[in-house]
Length: 120
Image (cartoon, rainbow, N blue to C red):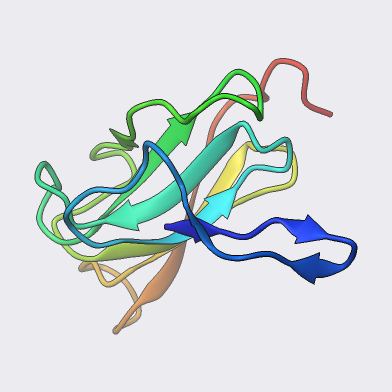
């Protein structure tokens, strides 16, 4: 996972994001509005089967990310789970999955959590 900073309307060179990448596939990042939480999918060891969705946090935008955490069986399945997108207020996570029980192929799922402290 890489990032690029905007300077005067133009993006600078891509920089590797410290702390979230592994030797496996890590992709499709989505950062919460306040830039204190990042969601992405990974094929690193410890998945439930296929690619899983992971999250990492930080206290300040100047801090490095925490060690990524697998969101577990409430979100992930033994199939491929990917393309996480967190809502504006940080309480709803939409993602794609080709798990059984859907309409076929990859379907869109959502999960919710309580309102975050300090969020609008």
